[in-house]
Length: 546
Image (cartoon, rainbow, N blue to C red; front, side, top):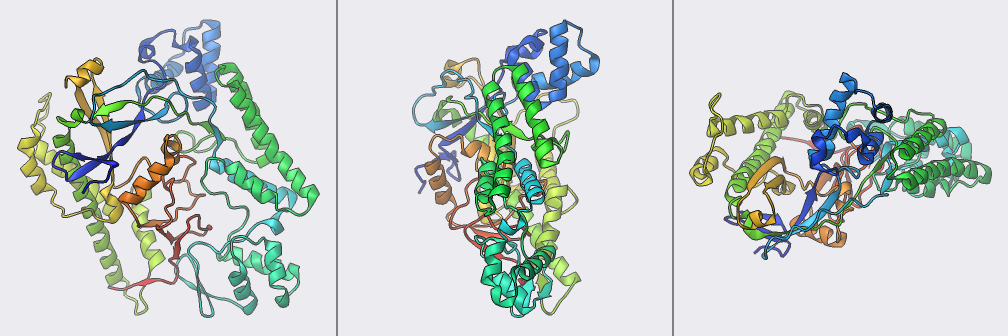
């Protein structure tokens, strides 16, 4: 039986969500080869956001009427293609909209302009600011120590994130048991007064933090408004002079952000306000305003803009008639891929346990770390090996000859071969039932779409994840409670890792972690940070046996 939020695909083996995320380019396609694009204010403003230095050079060249230098011209060509032709999801040059699949006829409507002004601080920037304020105004006694998400209590001590055991003295044991994620360091010291004066307890907390048992500083999780998380924690500072000084620094940053918001639409004003914001951040956070230059999804500067759109196309289910058979073949291979990844991970675990036998069992945190390495750094491991095998099998099936030009296959002709090449009874793990195809329809107009005269293009497939369950898409949905219900219907419970929010792999707006922390999910505590999820299982102290 198919849930109401799902639309069966072809044979019914897979289904699509009826609610569909729609991405588009934010600037007109005609501007791609427009020699006067430097004079268009939206293009200048996009550069001010994405690359301030290039933006300044472009504005100067436009004002002076100069011939663009070759290196700048090459750079601008890339930005023209991105802003005018790429279906993106960042800023006004990549607005996010939501449409729907339904049984009626296709209705596209006009592409609505992006809704401006959704400006947000990058998570890393507010984390850096929080660290600076703790140091500058000596706020440590009002920070809230948490037991690290991985750390598990045990008789006589705790198991640490790496699986090792650490014995604890009675006072340290009492501190760890008292810490609850709500009490400040001062509160904990008062609760442990029988073991020593506040200074003694404070020193012990410092030691426990250095050992990786307790967290330090202000905890700022991934959220749309991390500055509010910091403000709430600053409000607990009991010393009025220090609290007000720290709040003034934060307020200066918020004020600078508001100035940028008021300038949107004016490239020169946006650039000037961003310069002020960047300088102010460098001053109050004692850190550079940019990082990880040239990397993708890096949150390179202090603030970003996300822009939803009122564009809400209604896509007729008949559009899928010619697409579904081919898409189902790709999804079959994605299911096999998840099963193959799972099998290779289990094989790696068995090899590791056989190579390093331990009567007490192999520490689960170490095992998880060994499996996770290749997923982040691209090194050879179960994930990379399975990916290479997926490509090899598809290449063998399609057998494109060198220089053969356009290759055409019929889904019906390939179905038997695909099922034989990618056999899988089910997904490799529960949430691997989700896949995210990026599907594009090329047509001269809506009437051509309705008549079936279009070319469907699969841009890419994101296997084993619900790729719209991330802040940049989730918060743009017109009915977020419904979005949560659909996720719960698809996946009532699952086990997910707790990702370290200070890791370079985590940014402010995309997954991981998912935007929705479902109450019935069980999160594996594998970090030395606090848990941000309702139900957390602490992995330290767990062991694995064959």
